[in-house]
Length: 225
Image (cartoon, rainbow, N blue to C red; front, side, top):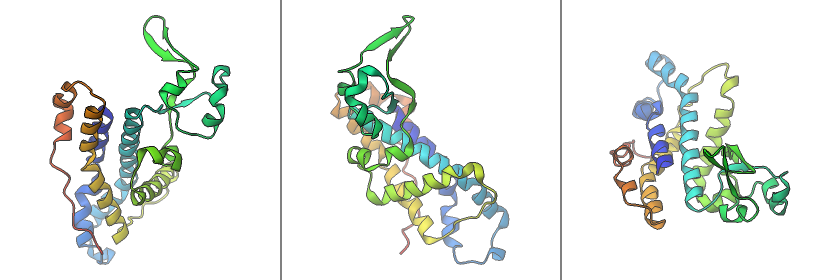
């Protein structure tokens, strides 16, 4: 629930959501006829919005995997005890906790932290989460997966950004609308996870997360043809 609430809250911070109506209304105007300061701000915010979108869906996808019993961290395939599943680890295939615990057990470090040998602090990368093997479990809509792959590629170029060109076109606006549609339904997935796993109902009553989950859905413009 925390991961999904964080996903929703992160996406709501995207500047492009607030500016989508403006972009749509001015999509066919010449640059000299636009509010240059507004357009410049949108353009400079786009790389940050890409990071926010990736963070949003990374949290969401990991929440789904955890709810279905899968490990969301990288696993050390060189660990001798894990040799029986080393091929699966090498091929970046989803691994169930129950399967992993057949070969490794929990242990306490200095009687404080409970850990499992072989599990890294690093979590699975976004591109791996979008792979067919993981998507067979996560089940994002195929059109959304394509959009997220494109945004992730743009995000990966963030540190090499030498100029900012606003991609204001019908496809861009429709892509954002598709994401908005999905994020507006994320709270239902959180409720389902809680109910399907028979978790205590106080999870549904936590004020902080309930506030995020029950906020009015993000409004958006009508889809373009």
